[in-house]
Image (cartoon, rainbow, N blue to C red; front, side, top):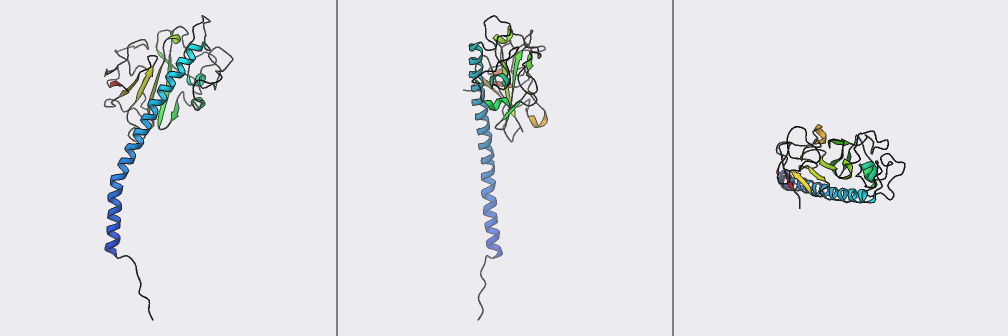
Length: 229
């Protein structure tokens, strides 16, 4: 007595494969778009947190290299409490920024598909980055104490353009977060295409951190920077 074998026919399998392919073609782009939006939203929120941390640091006066009683802004290594403040021996405790920002590599921090970098001013208000592993305990990077009482800037750009994010973001002492349309420059850590400290500022040639920022207009890097609400 034989038992009848049962299973899918070739046509039925082809139909199932076709349906799966159609669903994937719809779902995968949506998932990628959702991830990009999530990463960009996280980057904006992080820059707002950084702005708040800088305000707390400056108001506390914990960094006061010139001893004039006016607090100065800090690097990631200082804000996160990982290293001692400039020209000092103490760390900011409790830290005003997440300790995750103490993981500084090549003067940059990577979070949720984005790369963040802080700039502080030299005597001519040109942007200075922190030491490769964070902060500037020995005060050797050339940050000017007087300028650092009023100026700072931070950028966030995608690890991989089009994959972890598309827009690049900026914030400084004004507290407004700006974003590029990424038409002229596709900033991406994967291709070593990073914004200069002056990218979001107005002007040409040698641009200082005291210059106006390109809120809703074209900046020195040729891209339009708009205020993010």
